[in-house]
Amino acid sequence: MEMEMTIRPRRLRSSDSMRRLVRETRMDKSSLIYPLFVEEGKNIIEEIPSMDGQFRYSVDKLPYAIEPLLESGVDKIILFGIPKEKDEVGSQAYAENGIVQQALREIKQRYPEMMLITDVCMCEYTSHGHCGVLCGHDVENDKTLDLLAKTALSHVQAGADMVAPSDMMDGRVAAIRSMLDENGYKNTPIMSYAVKYASSFYGPFREAAGSAPSFGDRKSYQMDFHNRREALKEAALDIGEGADIIMVKPAMSFLDIVREVRDMTDLPLAAYSVSGEYAMVKAAAKMGYIDEDKIMCEMAVSAYRAGVDIYITYFAKELAKAMTEGRIG
Ligand code: PBG
Image (cartoon, rainbow, N blue to C red):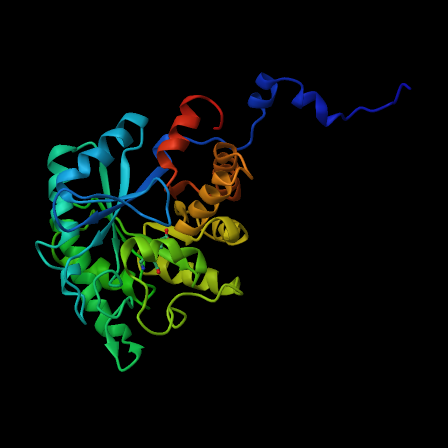
């Protein structure tokens, strides 16, 4: 049958090169950030049980993580520290010779081409596993701000190119900004975990970093995942306090939020595809239920399509490879 049809969407899907021509979402390796766990000690390359293919490294073994990343074209990392000692006030978070500070100095010196970002938070360093200092069972907001600002400053002094507060205290961006400015670091940007939900998708990370709270949960500081308007409020606050880049976290179940935040600000926008997203893909692939590589690509593209400029992912290396081979991007 001959149909009279002037508009035929299939014309633009007729070949691979035609599909590439009209592709709406384009990505680049330069937008990928890889999360890296550094642990105090020596000679450690320890696989994280809940995150197949992800490891904790001692400083002396960091080249095993960094060289393959650079080879794949990923030149940005966000560092997480696992200290030997924890205490009530998370002293190792802002210790001059803390684990992240040591790693920063070492990597900066050996691999100056690597952009170093640090996660600024207390939960890996406090004995109770909360993201700030306690008053009774409550996380004390304003006292925590001083410690977060100290932590950020010590990271920058040790070589961090950018700091990323993930604690969700009120006012932390302003506190960090003024601490950095007062100490001569006016040009160091802040990438704020502005919209961070209290999410069970962080489960495997907490195992990796040994940072699960010893009592209660994080719902008095991280956001309720039923909320959308609150995301815009959090983003607006951090923008007002001087955040340079805004993040939404987790990614996959929160792409509606990514789009909302994209539409309300012109700042660069990041999404963090968190440990639980990674672990689910790995586990399902191991069972033979899904194609790991294709699912990874589809997840990443969906974040960029929703509006992110920057994607933080444990699959950074594999995605870079997929981009090099032209499977996505
Ligand atoms: C620290 C922090 C967490 C993550 C990033 N920074 C854990 C948490 O908030 O409990 C989660 C990252 C991931 O799950 O991959 N507060």
